[in-house]
Length: 232
Image (cartoon, rainbow, N blue to C red):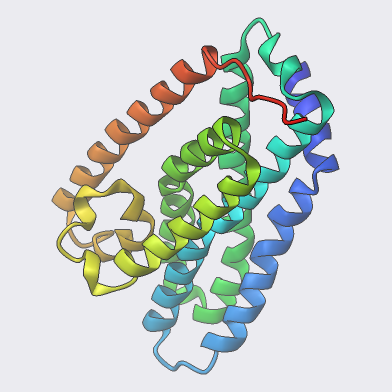
């Protein structure tokens, strides 16, 4: 409980909460204005969800990099290395990041609902659930890059992942491979939700295995991490 309280105070100091709330509001306003001219509500829904998922890695990278930079500035990670259960700290941070994405996505549901009306209530629920779920691998990757290397590269990784999603998730380049690449699920789940239960079970199973491997590897590495060199 003390760890969560301390983490919350640090999040406030890093503008984490401001970014978590401001990003989806700005996105929702822009997309509501842009997609409001479409008469096809289904197309508007798909484009809203697709664009959000493509931009999400940049938002996650910004959150993680700001927090890691703050931890580095206050003690060059020495206080983290001295924790008796440092894996508990990392699990908490991954969870808080995941929860923050969920809150941001929930906020972005309001403009989406205004855009497509109550006709798509069920699919707005899918958007909230699966967008939040399928961002987990990216969160794990961002935390590893930010801690292992630096916050700047974490931001670069966010941009690269967004470009990857645009190329292979939002375009036909990924049509034949996306089911086997869990990082693409955030931009592709709309094609199977409510249509193919077999495909949905397959991607969920592969997703769980992929995330379990990434998370276990991250915890294993972090428990043996000795910090980063300080450049004089």
